[in-house]
Length: 169
Image (cartoon, rainbow, N blue to C red; front, side, top):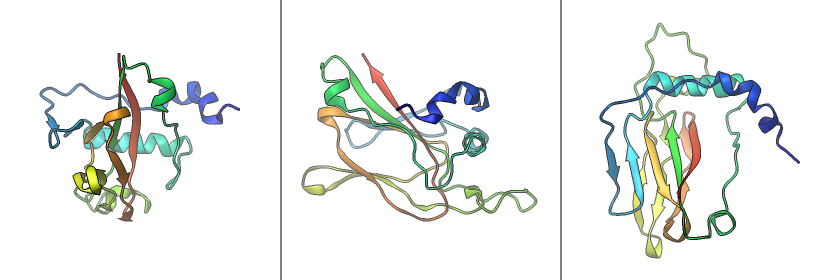
């Protein structure tokens, strides 16, 4: 059965904010792996606009939406490379000014503690630990070269992440 959010997507598509082009974005490869970060992929205003848009259409704290692509079924032909793109919409950033009218649940009013994305190599050694930084993009490969990875628990604040799959053919 189809997901109600998918059926309503045409009604909510216009509520998603526009992302402006950024000159001179820098891609950083983490430890000679298929892990890449892009600092300032979104501005603070763009990040907050995505959080506001998500909450306005019913996304709630603690809720996860989306599907994970099964590479063996969808991408197993060896002709495509599949990455997951994470864009951190909240993270370790400066608190808002005191005259700002933010709601108590607004994660930007307090710094985020925890929520790192951790990648493991052989024998569960930590290859990379990526702290959630507002506006930063993280790309990591899936398939045969995918590293075991996890998101650590958030111990303070609220972590918002925009997740998408990117396939290169």
